[in-house]
Length: 161
Image 1 (cartoon, rainbow, N blue to C red):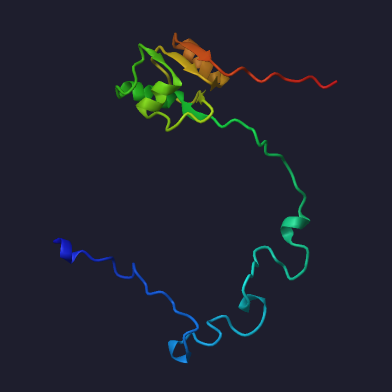
Image 2 (image 1 turned 90 degrees about the vertical axis):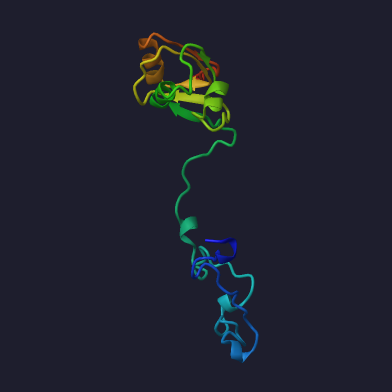
C-alpha cells in the first residue's frame, strides 16, 4: 500500500445534509421538520418536558447529598503493588511514596492522595507512605512485616449533643 492509495472506510465520510435548499433537494420548504408544532420551531428543549404535566424528575423526591469539598483519592490495591514489585517496576527495599507509585505507573495521578485497599495478596515487606489505607490493607502490610505511614489524619467522629 502506498500513500496515494489510502482511503477512508466505506461509509466513514458522509455528505452534509443541506436543508432548506429548494424542492429538488428533498429537504426543502420545511427542511424535514414537518408542519407547525413545537419541534418545528427553533429553541426546542424537549428533554424531560411532558406537555405541561409535572415532569417525572420533579415528581420524585430528592435524596442524598454530594459534598462539594469531598476529597478524591487515587485508589490502588495491594495486589497491584505486588504485581509491580514482581515485574521489577517498583523497588520493595526502598521507601514507597505516592510519587514513586505515580512514576512506576501504578496510579496515573495522585489527585488528593493515594489510598491503599486490601484486595489481593502482598508478599513483599514494604515501607509505604500514603494518604490513606483501609483496615484490611494496614493489617496485610503489618502481617507481611512492612511499615505503613498514613499522612492524612483520620476523620474525627463528632458526638451528637
